[in-house]
Length: 61
Image (cartoon, rainbow, N blue to C red):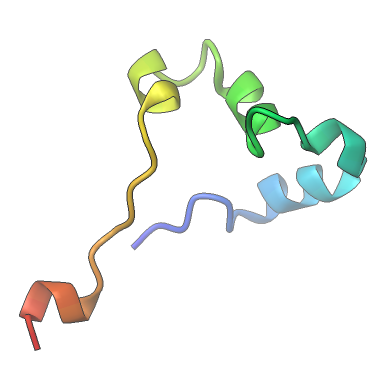
């Protein structure tokens, strides 16, 4: 399982950005989306949120 924002370089970068620059009324992750533009396919940036399966969901226990 890959946790997208667990990379130290990413977390260190976002710790240096002031809160008022990170928060937007329409999207809490707009900074990430702006940075991803042109580097990540648009369908990945614009898609709806979804979770990932846990062991419980996979095994059905």
